[in-house]
Every structure is written in structure tokens, then in C-alpha cells.
Image (cartoon, rainbow, N blue to C red; front, side, top):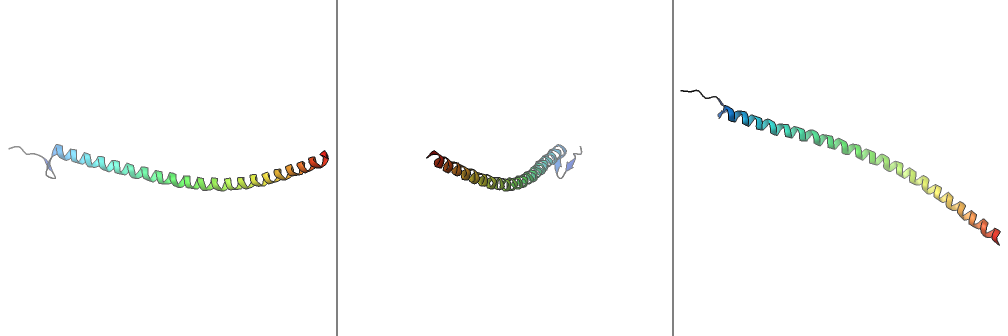
Length: 87
């Protein structure tokens, strides 16, 4: 009579295959969890960058708007000067 090795009621090759399959599933799950955590960190960083650039853009827009008003004011002064001197 030959003695067959059984692990959890499975022959040895099937038990090895089953544990290898489980390790593969666990490995994939862990890798996906790590990647999701990396993506969450990346999204948080992008949100911070967006807010930072939004504030910078708002300041730049205000400066451009005030500069534009000053330029338009001077253009109006030049036009008035040219009208008065042309007559």
C-alpha cells in the first residue's frame, strides 16, 4: 500500500497549485491597494496644485486688469490731447 500525501484533503500537487493561486490573488490585491493609495496621494497633490495656481491666476488677473485700466486711461488722455491739438 502506498501512502499519498494529503494537505487539507488535497493531493500534494493540487494543494501546491491551490496555495499558489491564493498567493497570486493576494499579491494582485495588495498591488492594487498600493496603486490606489498612490493615486489618492497624486489626486490630493493635484488638488493642492490647482488651488495654488488658482490663487496665483487670480492675483495675476487682478494685476492685468488694473494695468489694462491704466493703459485705457492713458489712451483716453492721448485721444483727448490729439483732438484738442488737431483743431
